[in-house]
Length: 254
Ligand SMILES: C[S@@+](CC[C@H](N)C(=O)[O-])C[C@H]1O[C@@H](n2cnc3c(N)ncnc32)[C@H](O)[C@@H]1O
Image (cartoon, rainbow, N blue to C red):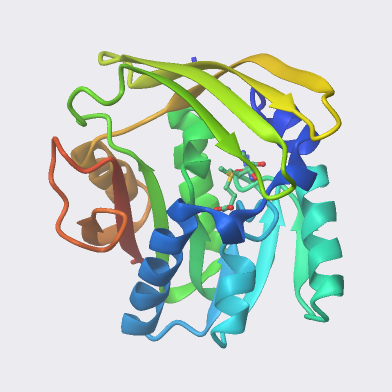
């Protein structure tokens, strides 16, 4: 069963290597989130799974008043260092999206499959807490891997990449989905060759994620005080039930 904790030690450990501003995923997701915030006239945003600030810095630079929170102390520490380095005054808090109370915001976001680290019951608890942190009529935006996706949830990845610091990283990863429960299990390892020839191996790494289809998300949201405004592919285009990798959901507090 998916645990919230089974990846947190790794998030803490590798926080300093996290460079969301360089990721292809963020280059698609961040403008998409911003378009929906703008469309719904949101000015204040609470990111309840901010990591090292993958959305927070981008949104702050686009004029939003943003607060970030995350369960990983290591990631919050890195986000604060980054804010200092960029001379940006942003509040980062350590806390659990299921329980933390920060205030009332026009929008709450939890991006990059963050809710997949929660059990189904944990996610419903988080939804109620998201609601508590929203103004009346506020919106909740999140993404999660689409459990109806054909083929791609049972796959093996094997690739080698040169990193910005010149080191070579070889990643081997396998994903397996249990279609009945929606639990995705990921097994992997990363070998890192540094420029001076040193080799480090991170892994084996194994974690699980709870993934959902669009209807399940709709039902859960309506049980917990939200009305779904729309469900999309990550880039904001039309959701294709068996083809879209992620479901980007926008829901309003009722
Ligand atoms: C894949 S990262 C995404 C971070 C950030 N949104 C981004 O796009 O770069 C998922 C994040 O969810 C956080 N997380 C997992 N469970 C959480 C919980 N219960 N409460 C708050 N954050 C949680 C992890 O610590 C991690 O930083």
